[in-house]
Image (cartoon, rainbow, N blue to C red; front, side):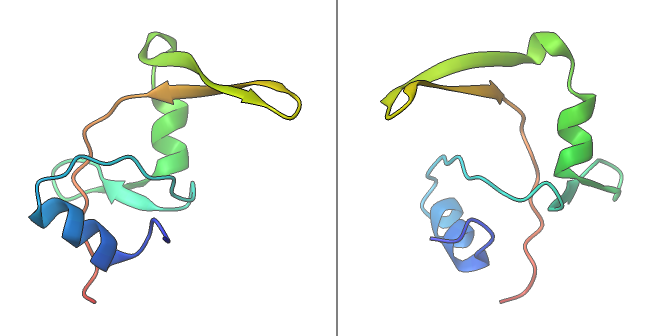
Length: 80
């Protein structure tokens, strides 16, 4: 399912389901006081201590490691 699909997000939110999705770094998110910022810019501004490296198990080339930072984001869905 496409993480930018507004119907998908709306379904999860209406059913009070927490979720994690991958979005393009060009995706814009709320930045407070009506401002908008690109996800790539927001992640670049996150302090080093906000990040945690986690394993998602072994892959074909060894352990799969991903860097995660937790943030609460207000997503303003486009109509549709």
